[in-house]
Structures are given as structure tokens and as C-alpha cells.
Amino acid sequence: MDHDPSSLRSYPHPSSRAAVLATDGVVATSQPLAAQAGLGVLADGGTAIDAAIATAAALTVVEPCSNGLGSDAFALVWADGRLHGLNGSGRWPAANDADQLRADGHRRMPERGWSPVTVPGAVDGWSVLHQRFGRLPIDRLLAPAIGYAEKGHPVAPVVSRQWDAAFDFFPNQGLAELADWATVFAPDGRAPRTGERWAAPGHARGLRCLADNGLRDFYEGEVAKAIVDYATATGGRLSAEDLAGHTAEWVEPIGIDYGDHRVWEIPPNGQGIAALMALGMVSNTDAASRPQLDAANWHYQIEAMKLAFADNDGYVADQAHAAVPVQEMIDQAYLKTRASLIGEHAGPAPMGEPRRGGTVYLCTADGEGMMVSFIQSNYMGFGSGVVVPSHGISLQNRGAGFVLDADHPNVAAPGKRPRHTIIPGFLTRGGTPVGPFGVMGGEMQPQGHLQVVSGMVDHGLNPQAALDAPRWQVERNGVVLVESQTPPEVVAGLRDRGHEVVIERSRMSFGRGQIIVRSDDGVYAAGSEPRADGCAVGI
Picture 1 (spheres, rainbow, N blue to C red):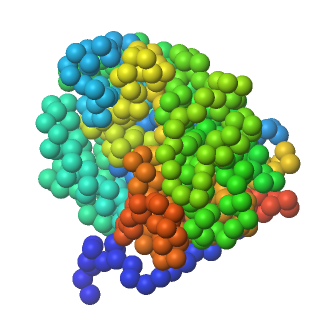
Picture 2 (picture 1 turned 90 degrees about the vertical axis):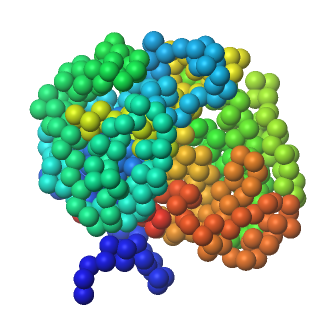
Picture 3 (picture 1 turned 120 degrees about the vertical axis):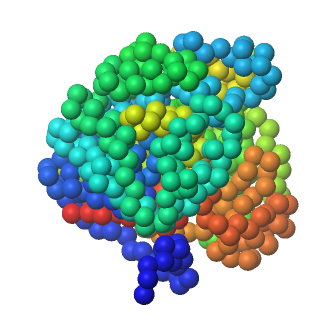
């Protein structure tokens, strides 16, 4: 029979995955070719960080609708007997001007074009991680990504759906600086089809510069010059000084006890604190004692998430520029007070007063016990839509996370990092590492963290089962989206409690996660998101 690309998107029969078990290393991510890139590095003697970098680099090629060389990144790394945090997000360029945006009539940050572009932080994140925990040379780590970009790779089904949506969107935005998006990502006048071989010569050139000259070439070399020249030619204000001055920063992770585990996140400017707050509130209810697929359980989780988002929106910002009450927000007494607002019916979510007291996720582990939780993102799919065609760099639009309210701690300002949605997670128990986890997907991320952690800690699910479970998602207007696999009695129970529930046929908006857990005898069990193209692989 003839090959029909559309058949690669159709899976009419139910199927299930088992957790992947391994002892010498494991990689889990949303695209199989990227997972294999990381596994090959582990097989060559690389560390979990080496594998994470190789996987992340490959993802910029094989999943360009979610990330690229112009992304930001964050990481949690278990190494040397402790957990390390890395903030690889970038700052708004020095020449940008929020007052001008207001004068031009903007009431909120633009989402496309040059205005929301911050300095891309992912590549320097790779560099800083590699300097501390890497073993193999950078050119070896980038080799799979370069191969996929030069020789081409078959476009995966979920990726092709996202590419289709981007093709319908970007050419119609009316911004001159977006013209090269189609030049690079739709040269045939359409998005590539599922299973079609896709090559990216410009992207390969950018990766080769990094392999040959080192990762800082992105900020101080040929790649940096290409970015600045393109900005100058198309109206951007990103300068050579902005790029050269950027470095990723080591940060202390923040955590909260949940059951007999401790859940860890990166501190603000990321929204991981919202996941910790919601978990802390849920632990003050009887939700954990109820079945996982129980309307009361979901109700308490949803209400806790609404309250956490209210504080997240009001307080989270760049701590170098604003006094964010981090410890107060995750204080057990404060969270108990917040949990007391949760009643038997859906309610409003007022902001509290704690001062009174488009993304990819991957995780890796190696045979020596190092484990990595890593996330990088362009945001909103392909990001800003600005693409440097000579080196295949699609620039993120993380500045869309700012606000323009001059009195808000997260107001846009030069040299400042915006509130970020992307959050890596990690679990420990009794001071020993359990493993990395994450669920990417904009505002779904802390909601996904809450649900998979509850699944594993409260209900004893293995990593794959925790990812397979039906999910809910509460929108900022209070509407609750649920997957079509949700039991009808759960939907009815939520509606009886006053929730406006919408059943979603597509699973695309409910996040895409990966999880690795390590047993006491050193066996890894890994799960990979059934809502994505990816897999977990081990040796």
C-alpha cells in the first residue's frame, strides 16, 4: 500500500506503555530521536548532564515548534550529594522601553515581534552546566543535533500538528520582522507533513559554530554577530552588549514537604512556587486520602491551584529587582490559612498577604547517580516569530511574561527577567534523591506538577501511570478543562460543586511530562508523556 502521512496521526485503538527500567542510565523526553541522542552520550561514558545537553540540543532541531537555540532554560541537578538549581533565563535588552510601549497604546506586553524578546539563556545554561558537571566535549554532545539538521529527520506526528498551527498563525501577523519565519520553517509554502524528512541547513550552521568555537560563541562570536546584525536590520534592540553580558546563575532550590517526600522547584522568577503552594494547601485537606479519580479530590486540587495562581500573579518577579516573599509564600502556617478558604463548592481566589509573617522538558540519569531535571522553551510555540535565518535561530518571546502596570513587581524593565512559566521539578525522600519530573505547557505546568506528584506520593503510581492518568486544567477565568477520558462521575461531581467544566477532546493542552525515579538499590524507572511523540530509553 502507498504511504499515507495522515495515517501517522491516527491511533484508533487504546494502548498503554510500561515504565522503562534501567540501571546504567536513562533519558526521557518528548521526541524519540532526541532521547536517543542523550542515550548515545550515556553509552559513550557521558554524565547525565552531558546527556541532557545532547538531548536539549537535538530537541531544538526535531521539535522546533517548542524550543530552539533562542530559548531560555532552567535545571535542577542532583550531584555530589545535593540538589543544585540553575536559572538560565535572560533579561530584557537595555535599550527597550516600557514607557514607549505604553505610549504606543499597549496595555499588556506584546506577544510577537521584537518587543517580547529577551536575551536567550538556554545555550549559556548548557555551557554553565557542562563546565561544572560535564565530561565529554561539546562537539560530541552537539553531533546528533547537527546530524539531524544537516541530513534531515522525519517530522513526528504531534510536532507536525503544532507546526501546522504555527503556519496558520505567523504569516498573518502583519509584522515585518516575522517575514523570515516562513523562509526558514515553511520554505515550500506549507508546514512539513508528518513523516516528511526535514532538514535545517541554517540551524546546522549555528550548531556547528557552537561545536567548533564553544557555546559562548552564541553570545560573543559569529552567532552573536548574526543575531545583532539581524536585529539592527529588522528593528530589534538586542545588542552585542546584551548578549555578551548574559550568564546563567546557580540558585538555591526551594522545597516543601508533601507526604513523606519533599518537592523541589526553582525559585522565582519562575512559577514553580505556585506548584509548591498548591501542594501545601492540598496537604491541609483530606484530598490525599481519597481515590485519585474522585471529584472531591479534584475539587480540592483545583481550588488550591486557583489560590496559588492568585499569589503567583501578584508577587512572582525577578528577585534582583523586586522583594518576592518566597519563604512566606510557602510557609506552612500561611498555606494552612489559604487552605481554609477552600469550601465544598467552587469559589473565588483572592490574593493573599504572605508578607504578614511553546516548551520541551527532559530528564536524565546516569549510572553514577547524577540526575537532571531540565526544561527549555521559546514560549507560545515558536516564540516571538523572529528568526535569524542564516543560523536558524528562532527567538523566544519570554518578555510576554512581563506586565506593563508600573506598580507591579513584574513590570517590564531593561535588564530584568520576566516571570517564567517553565519549571523543572525534583523529588527527594528523607534527604535521598527520588528523581526528576516535569510537565511542560505554559500555565499547565504547576497544575501538572501537582497532579503527577499527588499520583505518585498519594496513590503510589509508577512514573508512567502517573503520566497516563486523566488530567484537569483550570483556566484563569475559573473554567475547568478535563480530558475526555475523565470518568463521567468525576465530571458530574465537579459540576455539582459549582465548577464550569468543559470536556476537551484534544489532549494537546494538558501538558507533556517526563519522570524518572530511582529505587533504593539503584534501579531507575522512567515514564514518558503519552500526549507527546516521545519515549523513555535506558541502558
